[in-house]
Image (cartoon, rainbow, N blue to C red; front, side):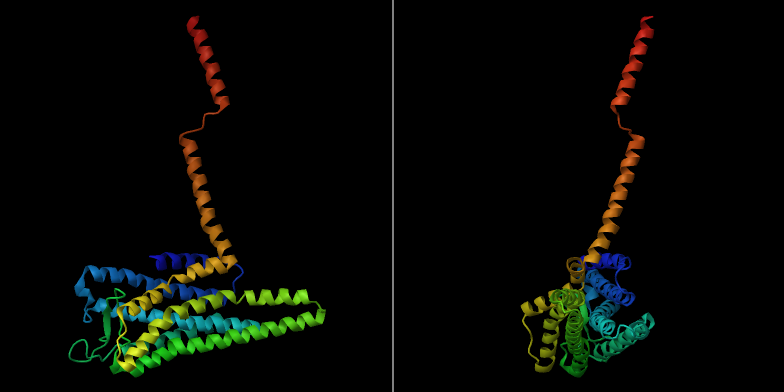
Length: 329
């Protein structure tokens, strides 16, 4: 529920934030949609708990929900890579930014990434002897009791190379690219700040510029750290079981599952606590609407039940006095 509600707020507010670049809005909206879809799989898990026959790896609902949940997790990591790359180009090459990072290219790269992730997931999820006698599509999908959801079995030793390929593409490659990108951004920002401060010979300007430039990296850096911390434990357990055939303890699987699922709604808290413009926009949208609704309800109430003022009371007293005089006459 937190993932669905939080990412619904994200989708509404991100379109109204004025000081955010168009590419950043596109990428953050893609991330919110991805997390929203992965959050809806929790409801599928609740349905599967109520109807145990839906937990079978031969059932179409279990197969599709396992593929969708795995694809959302893979797509979220590559979205973070594009956010880091977009931020890097905007700082390193500001004049060529609008020609290099067009919205069309961003969407095309995302589409190609999703197709590659889907191909890897279909390879890993097919041809498993655990479900049926013959290999079939999406047969390597299992129901994880620790999660309460169906997901592709990344622990299968028979498909270790596919699991390793996905691990390298989804976890290791994004981690290396993002770490190197933010290191480059930090060095470029500090160098530019020194050059500007040296030209004006003012140490206070150096501190202000460095603080301002590094402040813009906090949002993307916090989202990335949150995602990697959420998925590192689950990914490590999957690789360990695939290559050593040593099963992790149920407690370790539970902790890894909770951390992985929590990645779908932690971004909402990151936006609110780190990005001030997001807070202001959300306050204007939701608090302003609540105030307008309360004003409308109060005006409707006064229309049907008008307030009795002192002037109304005085007029009623004068009218009553006139009536008494007429009755006496």
